[in-house]
Amino acid sequence: MNHSLIKTAIHKILKEGGDSNYFVIDITKDYYIQAASSKGAEDVFCEAVSNQYLSQASKLSADQLNKLKEIGWHQPTESNVNFFLELPADNNASIDFLTNFLASTIKEVYLSDNITKESFQFHLE
Image 1: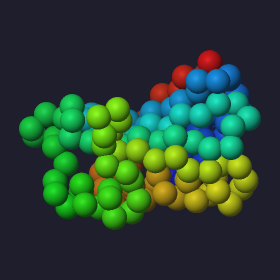
Image 2 (image 1 turned 180 degrees about the horizontal axis):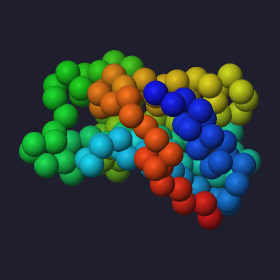
Image 3 (image 1 turned 90 degrees about the horizontal axis):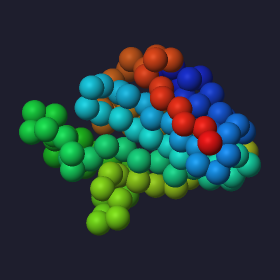
């Protein structure tokens, strides 16, 4: 897993653009994680795809759903259809924690270890 790509993406949405910055990591054709923040903000709002819009063939297994909850993702709600959480990103230690958290979600839940620069999409306002 290339942690440096995730860490660079977090820094980018916190230090560039404007008020509505985000990135999406395309893990597979169906699975993704996204993170949103603003330039100068101290936290990052993250979402991990749930079964809401996945085809039957791509639905997350009970083990994957349990793992998301076990590691700290909040269950989808009426207003948030994906798993979600907000984490601090106000210092190097918190950014490292967020980086490792996203990387372990990708590896342990979505069972991928193949994140490349091309996996990232950015929107910087």
